[in-house]
Image (tube, rainbow, N blue to C red; front, side, top):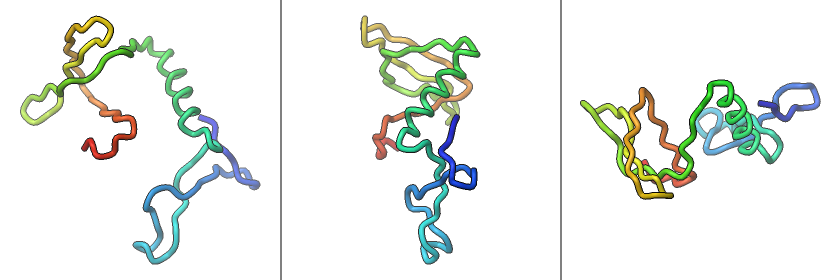
Length: 106
């Protein structure tokens, strides 16, 4: 993914969230790499481009209803296809919750 650069060619970093030096006493830490004001857009394009290399199948109009749990471990998700109302089970080695900015979902 391309990154913005400083004048001396290093990857540009800016402050993000509550990160600071010396447990809040040393000023704001600049630890977030960025692509000007288009970081999210650039990240999406990079991930999509890389996914094409692996013949990824997308399920765009699906809404997660429940996680499939076994012995305290998430092994998939139950989802509804919003186009036709059918219910689907997706089994997975790994499950990522992408909440779209709804920070209190956890």
